[in-house]
Amino acid sequence: MKEFIIEPLSKQFATQVQEKIDNKIKPLGALGRLEEIALQIATIQQTLTPALQKPYVLVFAGDHGIAVERVSAYPQEVTAQMVLSFVRGKAAINVFCQQHHLNLKVIDAGVAADFPKDLPIVHAKIAKGTRNFLYEPAMTQQEMEQAIQTGSELVKEIHKEGCNVVGFGEMGIANTSSASAIMSVITKQPVEVCVGRGTGLNDEQYRHKIEVLRKALLHHQLSSNDPFEVLRIYGGYEIAMMCGAMLQAAALRMLILVDGFISSIAFLIAYKSNPYIRNYAIFCHTSAEQGHLKLLEYMQARPILQLGMRLGEGSACAIAYPVVESAVRFLNEMASFEEAGVSNRQNIESDSCL
Ligand SMILES: Cc1cc2ncn([C@H]3O[C@H](COP(=O)(O)O)[C@@H](O)[C@H]3O)c2cc1C
Ligand SMILES: O=C(O)c1cccnc1
Image (cartoon, rainbow, N blue to C red; front, top):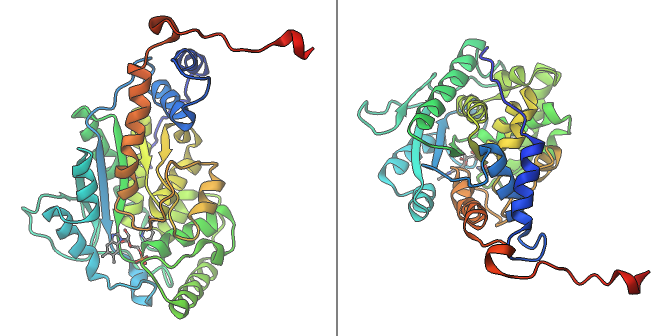
């Protein structure tokens, strides 16, 4: 299994960045979360003048054996059809990436269809969909390791191109089932807390999804000790590849933008294997998918946006990107009190209070 070395961030350097933030012409702390984001990015990059370079959104696509159990409102073919839509530039993630000038790469991690060789995606298919985890492990150890390795190689490539910020999205019918099962085992929460309606199940379908997942959890009787074993049993190729890519991004001191429920599950596995990765991540939104809020709380994550979105594809990474950009901009471009000749004295009348 590939080892990733992720460095903790320097507290000493963070103090210097905080000083720079506090000297900007504004009341102390007045830029709220933007200040925390600026502090995080500057500390990751170890510079008082950080920059976001060649931003990418990576969308990992894969199919799931569990889809035959009717746990999604949509058929499996939609995964491949959406990959083609990404290539045509007409899906939600295309629109938002174009809006904010983000580079987009679509990766076939394990879609259950044959794509033409010249289709402009990354052809990294591990297999045509995972196995049905209601009866058997979703993937073999070798498949999982190959997915993690491929994700890592991909991030090394974009890093070589000069990228230092990367958003993680996915496409895979039934992958909220996979994510819910993983969450239940790792966070030790009852499955019904971790399961949502995904693409839009009705009440009866939703009850059925919970029942299928309950049976699958009973079948494997897994303890939560090894996050990669949980990934192997219940995961998807796109989730495993995303996890490897996230770990590599942190190892290269890149900024990680986490999307919704499924992206956060890939991150959870990475985090459980190496807690330092937490310092390199920004959580872009709280998905409306039930389970996501509890998962974020479990990782003590405070996302940027809350728009009632439940799409995936990396859509929230693209939408939150300008907020992240504003954080970097104020740190670089705002004047300090000294530069602007603004008084930095606060009216604290200590005499009269005492
Ligand atoms: C047209 C369409 C576009 C999507 N884009 C993302 N997803 C999202 O929905 C799927 C997960 O939900 P479930 O587990 O219920 O299948 C994933 O593919 C996810 O990325 C989509 C789903 C559909 C139908
Ligand atoms: O939050 C997500 O990532 C999500 C939610 C529902 C369906 N697909 C993805």
